[in-house]
Image (tube, rainbow, N blue to C red; front, top):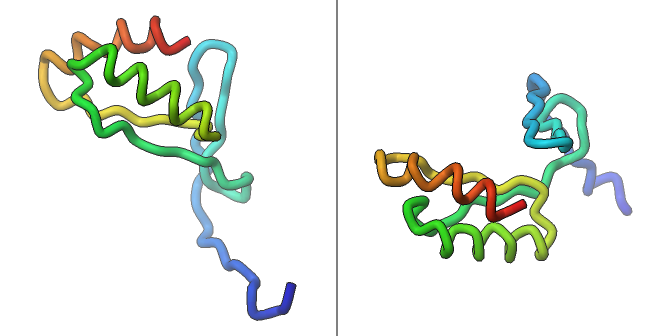
Length: 84
């Protein structure tokens, strides 16, 4: 690797994201976390779970969801249960 390929990282605060027994630390000088976001409606529980599992199988360590309506908020618990 030549010196021209050096990557400079901005100084950021580390943030821990935990669920169950797992914790992922984002930022600081921690390794880069592969993450993505679903493009399904969070109210669509089955579609969201399918997309989360596909992203996980593809190597995503963290998947984000949009929760922008009351219907979407109601779907979160079911998604969390089914995506384990």
